[in-house]
Image (cartoon, rainbow, N blue to C red; front, side, top):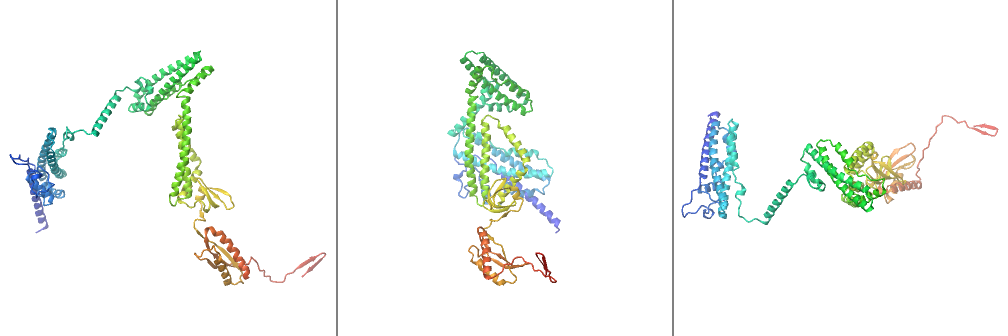
Length: 634
């Protein structure tokens, strides 16, 4: 038999199997979803109490006998016999070879089955809602209905999955499934309103009662706010918080805000006129007590004017953010609201000053602001000391961190906290710090461009702190300076030379050059060169050097010293002498060995030559000796 004929036979077998399987599945679903017959008189419904012992205890209640058989079959993992038990992967394979007409037939069968299950589910949900509405809250009945609905939802979910696979296969082969998909989506959302199945007469807990009361208060508060007129239409609009005015202006357009600004300017004009009339009354008053009382009243009116100006500025700011031109309004506010002092009449001037000093928004406010300014500075100064110390202590607890980093972190923390404290303290004086911060930022940019070298030192200092090429107390050769590191900041490093000079070396100069850390390691090799004459005994000289080195208490046994004949120089035979010592003992070993080896060479008759020259002449030398009046030649 050829391969093509066998493939055709296999395709026919698959098609027949799929058809039988789908027919059996639809039949089984139809049987399962038929309404249960009403029990005869004297009979009992099939519930958990009268299910045979062989039944699964997890099987849902209120199921027919056939449904229980399907449940047990499904739970036992036996061969699937219904459409709901067909694996999705197999169904996808079965649908691939079907034609569009065959798929339409399968779609009709699936939609009929889905319709049947949807009808039974809707009926069960209606029964549940009716039971709750009638107050039939029997626990067994509720459990039975819940199990029934859960079981039907499982069938619905399986059918929807398989129906969607069939619809997808039809759609791929050019079929129209829009209406069927809409029906499937509606059936998928078949669920009642949870409020309809909630017990209506159940007692309300205390927590729920509090929630209800809170909701009622929130609704009342919202209603009250909605009924409020705009801020400028209230009896004393200058007493309304500025935050409320900002929220009120937020959703308005620029034209609407401009209308509000005009209203506020009318309010401002009325109150400024009242204050001016009081100022005129102060100047016309003859009685000192009357003058002082009028000055106090004028100052109180000025407080109202200031409050109105604050709210006008809020409205102008909102208008400016929406693109409006506020220059004319700002000029008017600035020129119309100022309070002028009467410098021509000392009595009137004194009354105005006294009124200003006693005013809550005048001298009293400024005095309190100064106290706040000083108090904040003191608090931040103390906080900088404490927090800086804590940061330094925390940095010291971190293993393998540089001592330089400890001091830098501590000092930077103190300075940053002090700067923040100064800015906050200035804001307590009533000064707007936003322009100040902007000015600081602009000044920082200009200073940064002007001090590029300093910033380079700053960056180098950061890199030194991170890489830790040296630490406090180390002897280094960096930036052309040799000495002991005493301190460091982010700009320069302080080095104490061995002749007790203080050298401040820029960090950039150190970082961009070769850094030699002399004391980085605990041991160090001492390099000496000892020369003897060409006529001296080399072995004897080496033995003397070894003896001197072995007797020195600060020379380390490990690593062993190196003593070798190194060079035949012009005037001497040179030995290299390289013993090891602790870094702290380097110079003691160097100086002691130089002295002791010289003394032993002298005792042993070993010559340490000095530079000399031998002159070789080809003939005799004529020597002329002169005395007084005589000359002799040899």
